[in-house]
Image (cartoon, rainbow, N blue to C red; front, side, top):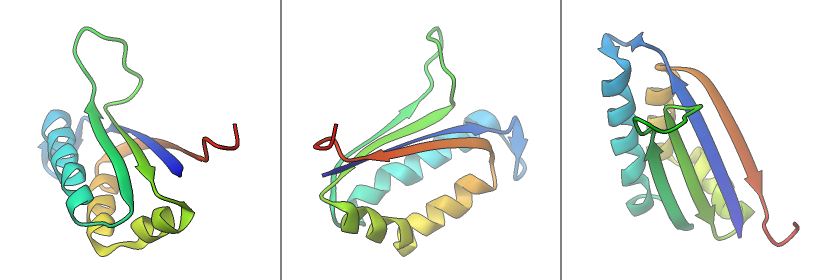
Length: 103
């Protein structure tokens, strides 16, 4: 099992749209991926919540069956469409992948 966590900060304005709209559209697109990409065990998309400390605008917590599934996800055409959408709108990204059995 491999865990994959990604967090993004979005530009105030990008691609003719404001931050909140871009975050919401990215979240919707991400939430569709588990039905399209094999090997996903868990997939949680989280938008920053008002009134709570937030370092990022959007985050993804996901679990894959193994590293092969994560690598297949990375190059899956439906995932790449979401990547293209997000990259055009973000100012920063952080990611960590890890195998919890090695901890």
